[in-house]
Length: 443
Image 1 (cartoon, rainbow, N blue to C red):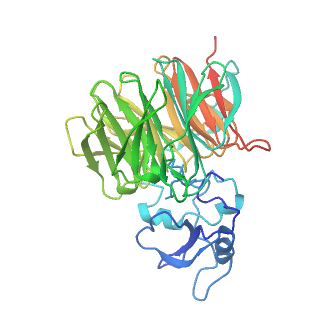
Image 2: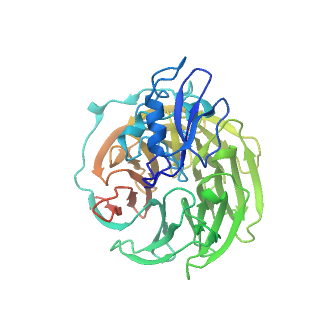
Image 3: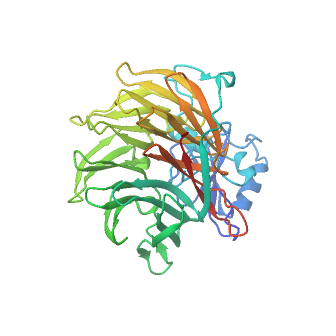
């Protein structure tokens, strides 16, 4: 079990059923804040009892579960996100997709925003390039994100399993060639009574200070580790539901998205002191990208399907359109274009940052959850959770170059020197192990 909408299998009271004034009901984990406009209708109770209560009509209430957005979210990857910031389309239990997103949608606004400018490029515009080579290897349970260190020539992967209290979590050091585990670090214990750990989810690398930064989402904190020894160096509290983390080496900053408070927060890479906090009312900032030349930071707003830009010298955000269920963002090498992963639409939006317009939207696959850019070729890689694929795009031509199988519940992608690294939540085999994949470019 990886997501808070999955069954715990223990019979413990892990969930609620929420209801709103319209009579809609929705499954909700007990540990997540109840969104405005919703109240507890049933529970706390077990996952199974909550699902049964949703399927039973109540007097004066709708007989349908809370209205789902087709193929949308996976909680902690509202729309409630899991610690990884996802939404509910990626849950492994198919019944969960019926009992989904009413509360999450109401908390942040409808997924479909008026700012979406164009329909997705139709399937007939797709081409295929079989020259990409995919190498896959089983790695560990509960994989979330992956980052690459050029200084050390390694990958850093986060792994966390289960509901709070999370007692199984590791920061994994992986060889990018063999995809074998080199070392792992267990986060510090936060509660001796339960054995809860400061579980790790988002990840980014600082090769100047030789550190790796992670979001300790359930602890409402960032944490930093030594790349050399794997030792935990510091915990930076005061960030509610941090989803993603991005490093700005030129300005000595690390940024994180505080999803539950609608904020984007920066800390000093050396002193760990908070340097900037910008809050956008009603937003759920998820994936982040930083322009290394200007220092502008961009956040995908999962609540309102838009893109948030914070300029380096400003505390006033600029709001740009994106696609339905925008959850991640990447930048072109010249910093003039942003690409958003749109989980609800199963697409990537091409956003012109100068004009503030969506120039194109390209279908990728169901549940597009993450996006990354190859700065050498300009190609864009999109991880599609529900489709279990990674799609390679030519954003200028608006075409799909390849659809590559990268495991059930493909979760995250990062690019390094033309090679893509992808992690999934496939839970394959009797050990329910998730896998890592390396996508090598055509020779």
